Image 1 (spheres, rainbow, N blue to C red):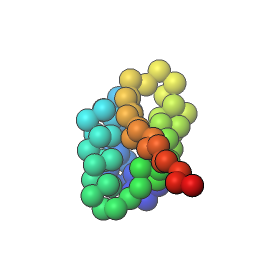
Image 2: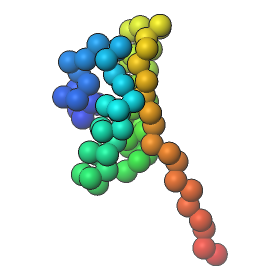
Image 3: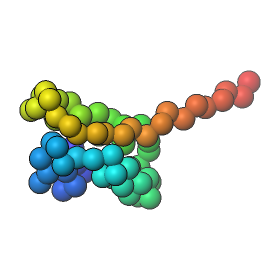
Image 4: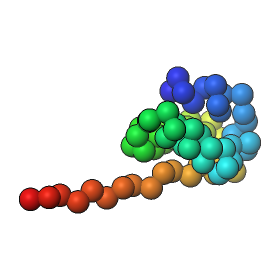
Length: 72
């Protein structure tokens, strides 16, 4: 949650866009943060927005799940 505040804390729910969430994910990947952690953070943001405004127009794009193959 500490990472979300500086990026999204000053915005109204209708100001959260797909481009902002993509930029956030890209920035966090460059810092070495895993896609799972990014998904978790954006899920928290989504829940906060839904809780505060049920009719929000915010668009949050989650990173894709990566499939891992098991070597036996």
